[in-house]
Image (cartoon, rainbow over all chains, first blue to last red; front, side, top):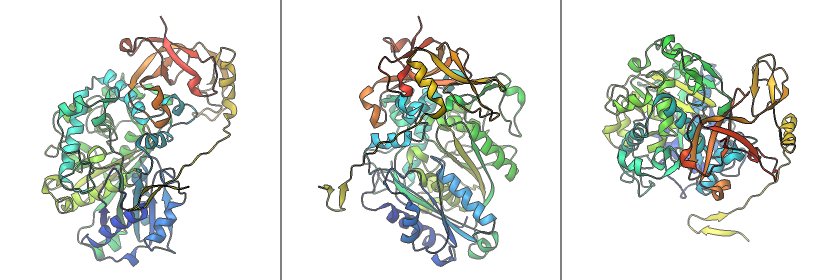
Length: 424
Length: 148
């Protein structure tokens, strides 16, 4: 990866169209990173957006391609629910690694504000099985609440631990000028947002027990752009390329209820022991097998045998505070069942051993679905270049000396998940 | 006439409506058996797995499944009370969602729980499936109630 760009994220960017937001991020990627690369050097694009419903426009990729002036070069649209961005980064990597493109621009965006919030939630819920799950009360926070409750029942995870995730991510976002919950630095932020406490989270209204309003991610307008280049080109155009060392993708049943509950069925990572999980029914509805599978592949490619020690920073898909805790376990940062303890012990805090979501993540910064996984790549790129402070407008988000990180993108109730390792 | 929401930037309102003719395909017997007061679902004899919702084809071996009758009795695997939802279900709030473990079924089944005592609900509580008298031919025709 050789460059990245973001827009300001907002509940509603009424000032710009979707393609104008993409241009804002593309301009930053091309002109504000330290690279010797022009617009004409881009050989093709990977366009990353989730829903045709939000704008009622099919083939939006073509609008992006011509608006940014890349015709007649190749372009492809990638879609995979919440993991759209992570899949697009993987696809950009595949295009470059295969030699199809020497320089690829991955353009992620979503404009979710043109329908009301309840309708937006309904559109998102259309990414659940519409024969069986949607008619029951289709609402993703409901599905995640069921999974969170089962995680609590299975492992003793608490609402306080979940609240700590919200506080960490939301408060990290207060030093990231792109973040939707940062009214001090982002002119398009929610005016009533700002820093929060565990008490604020616990007192916020229940949306779907045990999840409360502040346990749940944002819904955003915005765009993110990443530029990937072949090794040969990258070495020519920048002194500080960031390398993709490995990338994995996993999947699971669309309906979480269909997933097996196999006793002792955890696919082990290199540092794990079979006896840890002898009695655990896996994956059930409490764990994300797709996340585990994506990590297993990425770790293998990047020679990671102890992720907690070998990774310096993570940007992961915190759609819910509970799913950040679940994801710690899928990624093998701690044993299954001990994810809540990891946040409680401060391991994933900005000054902890392995900071998670220094950008603020989906809870603090943004969730403009198709842009989200690309945003994570951009954030990781800046972290590993050591320039996060410059872009964020505050040094407090920079993880000092970060050399290797992981980005994690997640769809549905854990239906598609990607994990990608990036390194200096 | 187009309704204008804002002048600068210019924002207009555009309604959109559509009707689908949706086929349940080979899972049709689940719905038609409800009208006879039966819960039918499918089982793969080769893999020894019973699925609910039914699947005509087994995802493990890609063989064809067979229809079997189930009792509809079981217990709560996990639950949540919803205080907010997508637009379509706002009128129903608050309501309870549950995954239930059913006798003879290997998957867990998402449905609503209807109870006069939502505060008494817990994991492991016995339930039985109920069927609506006015079938809408949707999965919401079925729900769980406490089995006391």
